Image 1 (tube, helix red, strand yellow):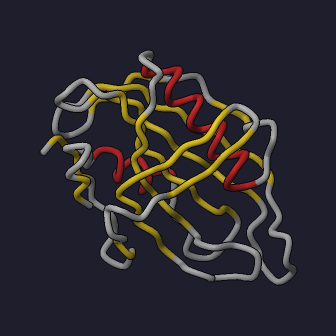
Image 2: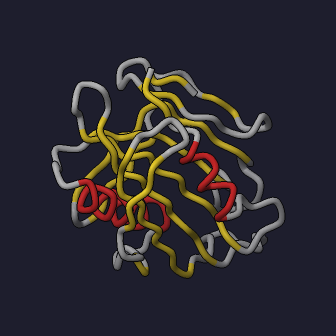
Length: 169
């Protein structure tokens, strides 16, 4: 997934749908709003009450602290994507370096979630965020939202592999 405007790219599994760069992943919550570019999705309408089983995008932020950026975007994604006003249970930020050498801060947040429409086995969510800087020193956050408790869900290991593929272009 190439995001030319941010000068970054990341890999997604071959079964995922890559959306045009102009499509945005937009969420808002009590603590703010995010608009992600370079959206990739998997499992559209896989069950009643959920749009996708997994989605990823990169958002820019005015936050300069990478750990704070990752935490903030994780909270907004949990609130907007899963109607969790608490922002979920957020892990402590950890330093991470991608395969291409991009250093940043990684955060995972998770919580219970039941779709509004009956008939879906999803019972929780995870949001993985990785705050980093691109070649022109813009603070960006790669964000991955995952429905949990369902067949075919993206595992934590697969999400981290996706983050590890992030590179500057």
